[in-house]
Every structure is written in C-alpha cells, then in structure tokens.
Amino acid sequence: ISVFGNGGGSNSIIPNIINRPLSREEQLLALRQRSKSSLSKTPLAASIKFPIIDKTPLIRIPSVVMFKPGEVSLSPAARSSFHHLSMELMANDEFIRIESYASPDETPGKFKTLQALSVERALSVMKFLASQGVKVQNMAISGYGAEKAIHNGRSSAQNTKSARIDILYKQ
Image (cartoon, rainbow, N blue to C red; front, side, top):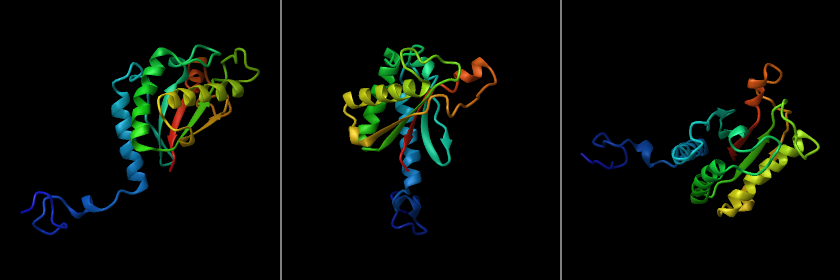
C-alpha cells in the first residue's frame, strides 16, 4: 500500500483526484479559505464575511468599521486587516476587484454624491494595498454609492449594512 498514491490504483490511500490540477473555481475557494484564515487574526475578524455570490467568492467588510461617516481614511483596524490580506494577495498574485457601496442614509461628507464617496473609499483601499506591495495592475475599483443597496429603504439599521467594501477574486 502506498501512502502517497501510485496513480490512484486500488492499493492507494490517496485517490487519483489529488494528482489533477485544481479548477479555477477550486483555486478561488482555496484562496478564499486562506484569506479567511489570515483575516481571522485581525481586529475586524468578527465583522468580516466571506459569502459566495454567483459562484464568486468575496470578502465583505462593513464600511462602519473601516471609515468614519463621510470620510475615506482607513481606520487603524482596517489598515491592520488589509495588511494581513495584502500578504495573501502578494503570495498568490491574484487579480481583485474592490467594490465600494454606501448606505442610502449616509451623507457624502465633502463629496458631492454617495457614488463619489464610494469611489474614493475603494481608491483608499487600493492605495493602501499597493503601499503594502500588492501590484496596482492586479487591482480594479468600482464605487456604486447607494445604487446596489442590500436592504434599501427598510430601516436605518438595515441600510447601514449596505455600506461596505467587497473584494472579489477574478474568475
């Protein structure tokens, strides 16, 4: 009996499936799991979610724990969390999309619109990740304002959940 397998024959403990290359979906799920593990050691760990939407794994962080209302400067806790994430991104040389959303109840601060605030917040995350060594060409940003609210119009507490940063791994 071979512990490491011999092509998946009947005497192998490890099946042949281990020897095949991972699909892109499996690679992304593995990256999601490593990111989850890395971010579990950060100050924002309890706030970070890791949903899979339309077969795309993402990291979802509420804006309320990263930014003061109407502002774009990252909180110290957010900087620490993004520092941990940057290590994972650099190790895997993955392309990410940083999407920022605002709550319909939020005020845009010095920005004219919630969309402008969202774009600046996504840019703030991108600049910080770049300062940690993540390649700028491996990142794209989008700011949606309150356009794609999660719980639009139900209550202020629910609308707050719409203000977030989503980091998506490219399929």
